[in-house]
Amino acid sequence: MDTITDKKAEQRESQGLWRRAAARWLDVMKEAHTDPQREHIARRREICLANFRML
Image (cartoon, rainbow, N blue to C red; front, side, top):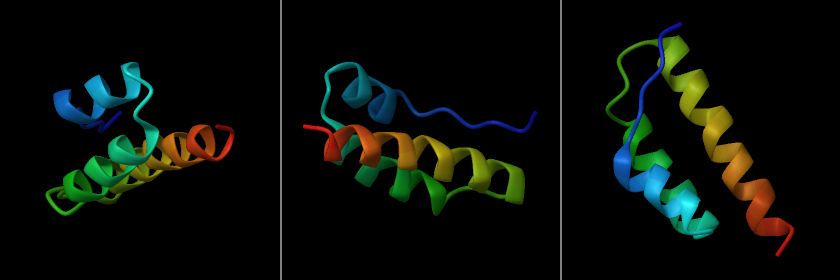
Protein backbone atom coordinates (compact mmCIF):
# COMPACT_ATOMS: atom_id res chain seq x y z
CA MET A 1 0.00 0.00 0.00
CA ASP A 2 1.29 3.42 -0.95
CA THR A 3 0.62 5.42 2.23
CA ILE A 4 1.98 8.67 3.50
CA THR A 5 2.25 9.86 7.10
CA ASP A 6 2.58 13.25 8.69
CA LYS A 7 3.55 13.69 12.33
CA LYS A 8 1.87 17.09 12.70
CA ALA A 9 -1.45 15.89 11.32
CA GLU A 10 -1.33 12.72 13.39
CA GLN A 11 -0.47 14.68 16.53
CA ARG A 12 -3.42 17.00 15.95
CA GLU A 13 -5.67 13.97 15.47
CA SER A 14 -4.50 12.48 18.76
CA GLN A 15 -5.23 15.80 20.50
CA GLY A 16 -8.73 15.93 19.03
CA LEU A 17 -7.91 18.99 16.93
CA TRP A 18 -9.89 17.62 14.00
CA ARG A 19 -10.28 20.79 11.93
CA ARG A 20 -6.59 21.60 12.21
CA ALA A 21 -5.66 18.01 11.35
CA ALA A 22 -7.92 18.15 8.28
CA ALA A 23 -6.26 21.38 7.18
CA ARG A 24 -2.83 19.84 7.66
CA TRP A 25 -3.79 16.78 5.59
CA LEU A 26 -4.82 19.14 2.80
CA ASP A 27 -1.34 20.69 2.89
CA VAL A 28 0.21 17.21 2.88
CA MET A 29 -1.90 16.27 -0.15
CA LYS A 30 -0.15 18.98 -2.17
CA GLU A 31 3.11 17.06 -1.68
CA ALA A 32 1.69 13.65 -2.65
CA HIS A 33 3.11 12.13 -5.82
CA THR A 34 0.75 9.26 -6.60
CA ASP A 35 -2.99 8.70 -6.75
CA PRO A 36 -2.92 6.05 -3.99
CA GLN A 37 -1.16 8.55 -1.70
CA ARG A 38 -3.77 11.21 -2.48
CA GLU A 39 -6.58 8.71 -1.86
CA HIS A 40 -5.09 7.72 1.50
CA ILE A 41 -4.74 11.36 2.54
CA ALA A 42 -8.28 12.15 1.38
CA ARG A 43 -9.63 9.29 3.55
CA ARG A 44 -7.69 10.53 6.59
CA ARG A 45 -8.97 14.06 5.97
CA GLU A 46 -12.57 12.87 5.66
CA ILE A 47 -12.24 11.04 8.99
CA CYS A 48 -11.02 14.26 10.60
CA LEU A 49 -13.87 16.28 9.13
CA ALA A 50 -16.44 13.69 10.23
CA ASN A 51 -15.06 13.76 13.77
CA PHE A 52 -15.12 17.56 13.75
CA ARG A 53 -18.79 17.57 12.70
CA MET A 54 -19.65 15.29 15.64
CA LEU A 55 -18.38 17.85 18.18
